[in-house]
Amino acid sequence: MTNLAPLHVVAGVVRNAQGDILLARRHPTKEHGDLWEFPGGKREVGEQPEETLVREFKEEVDITIQRAHPLIRIRHTYTHREVLLDVWSVEQFSGKAWGREGQPIEWCAPHLLRTKTFPAANYPVITAALLPAVYLITAEPLKRNDPKFFYQLERNLEQGIQLLQFRSSFLDAHEYCYCAEKILTICEPYKVQVLAYTTPAIALSVGVHGVHLQQADLLQLVERPLKKDLWVAASCHTPDDIKQAQTIDLDFVTLSPIRATSNALGWLTFFTQTEQAKIPVFASGGLQYQDIGFAWAHGGQGIAGQKKIWDSTMHPIN
Ligand SMILES: Nc1nc2c([nH]c(=O)n2[C@H]2C[C@H](O)[C@@H](COP(=O)(O)OP(=O)(O)OP(=O)(O)O)O2)c(=O)[nH]1
Ligand SMILES: [Mg+2]
Image (cartoon, rainbow, N blue to C red; front, side, top):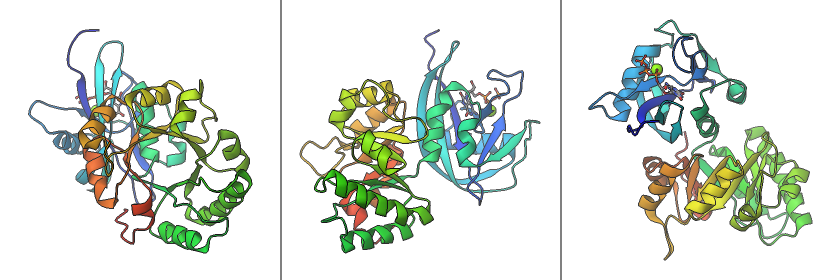
């Protein structure tokens, strides 16, 4: 290893109308030959990352990118060089993709992404590509059949929420499970994924899509509590929490509080921590939809929102 600055590589996640993601296969003679990648390449001197993205997509796959936002930045040390893989999510593009350098390309269904072999730096990027920008944390149901709760749940689903954390501190374990099963039934037709804010064992018994750990539980664990086919996320408040989440191989975390309290971290601290992180980080704590752009600009996956998002009638998702 030399002390060179990391090689800044900009790549993009592009989806077609079906939601499939564009992949290219690296030329066999290049480093990481024959592996799949997100199209992109090295930033040239004087370029802004977005300019690199636009240039590389035109050069490699003949697509014109019109709008994109930052998705995740991963620093990874390969044997010969450290790479900063700066990945963007493309919101709008024109043109029909083809491999202009003779490389095979493929539109890959999201659920098949994990079956492909990528360079090692890409694994958290795949997680980021599978996660939406808004992670909705439910309000507290007052009882297991709280009609207002279920009414508001459906409003949120109709507006395009894709990832939900069912949080309740009132309900006992039995009522929590009853309520979680009902939420799952309601979410199913919307293909929304539900994480339970409870123990991994209860999450497994209810059949949700994953578990969201409290900070205290995260710190107790010595290994990932569920297999890779379920999400495992955690609430973090410090850089050490995030390190622990990475050590036990969690998928993503929330970092809070960003706003609204006397001990708020603020966006600059959030940025410092996302720059160190090796998994996607949602900003959380006092945030609303208008904060998504701040989260992206500071290295976040998006926002994890509770009350202000749950009660909102304004959903600028998609
Ligand atoms: N484009 C891209 N590069 C990746 C990904 N993952 C990953 O580790 N890399 C690494 C591999 C390479 O070391 C580096 C990108 O180099 P590259 O060979 O694509 O660069 P380039 O397009 O500018 O190619 P060239 O002009 O040197 O031929 O980043 C990915 O998903 N997409
Ligand atoms: Mg390239």
